[in-house]
Structure formats: C-alpha cells, structure tokens
Amino acid sequence: MISSEFVSQLRYFDASQGPRKVGPRAGQYTDLGSVGVRFMIWTQESGGGFSLVEHPIPPRGLCAPLHKHTREDEYSFILEGKMGALLGDDVVFADAGDLVFKPRDEWHTFWNAGDEPCRILEIIAPGGFEQFFREMGNAIEANPEAPPPVEELGPRYGIQFDFESIPRICEQHGLTHPMLEMLQASA
Image 1 (cartoon, rainbow, N blue to C red):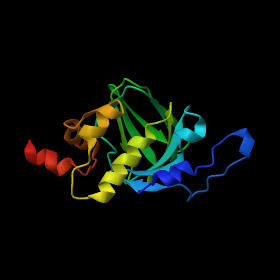
Image 2 (cartoon, one colour; image 1 turned 120 degrees about the horizontal axis):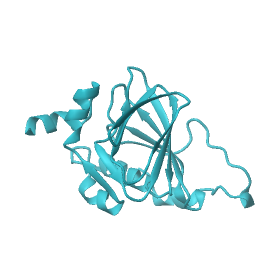
Image 3 (tube, rainbow, N blue to C red; image 1 turned 90 degrees about the vertical axis):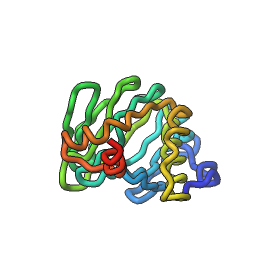
C-alpha cells in the first residue's frame, strides 16, 4: 500500500534541489493482477506535466480491457519484450526501443505479445492518472477477493472501460486476463 505520507515526502524534480536518481528497484510497486505498476515519477514531482510508471506485463497477458482516457495521452516505451496494442482499429506490435503513442479519446488496449517478460515505461501526460493505479492497487491489496472498484474509479479519473472486449481480444491474440473466465462463464 502506498501511503499519503510517502507521497508527501517525495523529493520533487526541480532545479532548487539538484538531480534525483530513480534506481532500477526504486519506487513503490503494486500488482493489479493483469499488470504491475512501479511508480517512478509522480505528478507532484513534474509540476503536473506528466507521471511515469513502469509496467511489467506477464507473458501473453492482456493489461486492460479496451478503454478510453478523456484527460491524458499515454506514451509506451518498450524496455524489453514485445508489446501489442489495439489503437482504434489498428493493431501494432512494438519491440524494445520502440515508442507507441496512445492518444486521449481513442479506444485502446495493450498486452505482452510474447512468451517472455515485457516491460514498458508509460509516460502519462498530463499527470494524475497514476493515482488511479495507486487507488486500484490499495483496494486490491486490502481485499483481494472483492472485485476491483473500477465502477467507482473510472468516472472519477475520466476513463471508460469496455469489459466485454476482454474475451474477443484474448481469443484474437492468444492472451489471458484475470477476468476472462468470469466473462466467458456469463456469456
């Protein structure tokens, strides 16, 4: 769980305090079930311009259902592995060193398109959406058996989800997702 005390003790990236280094194991981490989140730069540190998280993605794992952000753009820089993404009607694949732009107001999702680990850096601009990950992670940690509070958090963070897309995307691309069995059983 990420405490508000931790967030208030952040050393901001600004010239008055000198350089700051985030090491390969630094930052808070949470597991959302379908994707991990390592918090590297919080909105407060960037003056609101952006936030930065690392997403480790399990092999053949779908990170999220189709979804659409109304407030921010996302930029995924692939550190290792192969990421697949559905951007509107286009499917793209990106390898280590590639950058994928996911603009606001466009339906999209992404996944690990390989059998090896995939890690991406996710730049979210403007910042603030990392708090969605924090709240979701805290809720999952507090009650792992309860469904994640997406119905409550989605509208608050300006994001829409299409949960019905999970089985179709998983089937089309040979993926898994924690909600897949439940959605298939109810169909």
